[in-house]
Length: 500
Image (cartoon, rainbow, N blue to C red; front, side, top):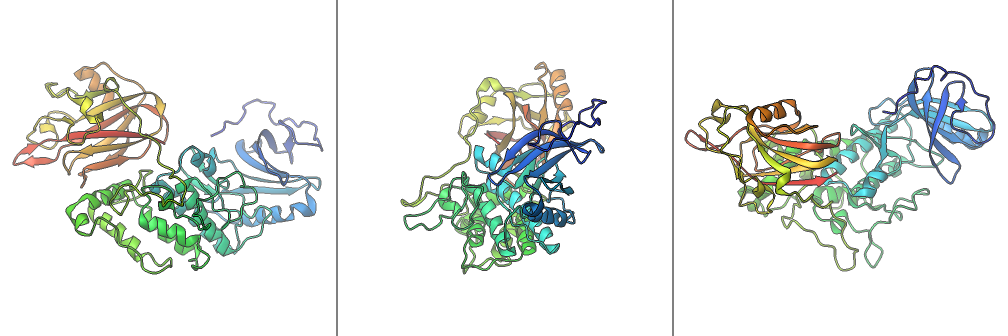
């Protein structure tokens, strides 16, 4: 979070200027301007500021002139201040000075969705999480008898802790409840493809966003036609929200539907495992498909989640990419559609960036072969010895593979194992230790647990990117699966890291 200046003279009053706002100026004897963040063609500016009374960072949306031209902005701010919701930016103050007007709201220390997606489209799982948060915010606004009127990638903000919030309600624009809900579909489309459907959702200040992909007749391509790996249910939901021929649900119904899909990373990975299982193959390797062009109560989507729920309990969806439900793994665009937009390329690791961590209790005979986890062949890998108990024969707390990224980065970690039933943690740390038994013990004990899969009913684990960039990652095995009577063993076949 932006730090508040501790200068004892911070509360001194500078001379108020009536021209252009300037850094250091204090508005209403309280809000100090710190940095101009952005300015749009309508003359509205967004400043990072400080509330010198409560000593907290704030965002200040300033408009020249005030008076009648700022009525809409101020009315929207007053109405938005009555909406208390975790996914809606809090509004603290609204002031009209005549020659200018400004709204003071919560400062979100992060970036807009448009900035994140400009680097790379989100994974389907992460896009679902963002869509759920935005739909929940819109539902809260509608419940307050308001229309937001300004849902787009620039008003969807993601803070550094991953919280998703919607800001700047009805900023000088008209809108309806239906347009709000269709705009949630636009946000999903943008998050999945990096493109905005301008024809379906005109965006006055978003002309610099790439237009959606279309066929030779100008018809909107669905996300699956633009990019491989988008699940069928999410593809259809997004397409229906953008289709004017399909009636939209209420915002709270849409939020509930996306919430049902907003399950923990285990559910997504379990779903991927399901499609690779004999049962998934028996079903043709694909998800049940909705019938008819409508957004219903999501019976088929719920069936998918229910299947995943039978495999593993879930709480929240990770940024991991979902498997293509059609089983092919790659969805190609028809000839009339532009080339696909893909996920970021996995990071290429070398053997000297990896080593096995084996704390006291073992004989350190399992340190070799770690280079096989990055050879691209799931039939080869690093393997533990065979133990008589799942907890490494009760000799030690676990074993793992340390990865040195060379510099702090945020990455998604995918681990392919040789068998189901293992318990594995992703730990992070700030430094390496000597490659000895005692050094390995110090290492794993000092590293922080970021995520854990317990008795995992699958062979492909996906770990969320840690909140903070980190140089050192530890894939730490705490329990081995049974491979025979009184025999416990595990192989790590592949480790894949994808930047986020």
